[in-house]
Image 1: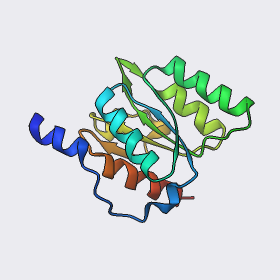
Image 2: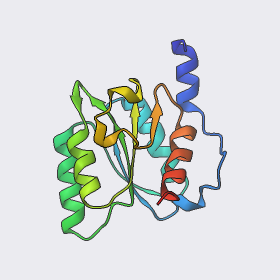
Image 3: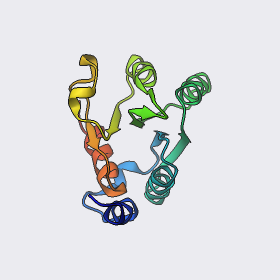
Image 4: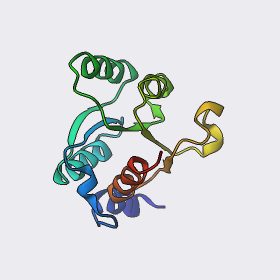
Length: 144
């Protein structure tokens, strides 16, 4: 996909699911691509979700998880970019998994680059658009 198509894709906001499932949900965003993070935040907030973040480092995301756990403001679901400035997001995924919080991984690498423990985790291949991520979050919310 060339960069002009990617930019168009990032800004796409077509609805392909009933997004009412996001209303009132607290969604953690961990993403180091500023444009994608901002577009995703706008898209989720437009559907009534409360966005926690976006955070672009593992340390900041872990602090947010701790803060939201202590304050009893549960995180309902998360979007995690696998590679944050060269650092893998897996400690964040581990922390969420330990708390039973579902998450969606985004990566420009294939599923084969994920550790075995996340081999079956839902993921979206980058580059992706906000509608795809949003729809994948809704799908994830309906998975056991």
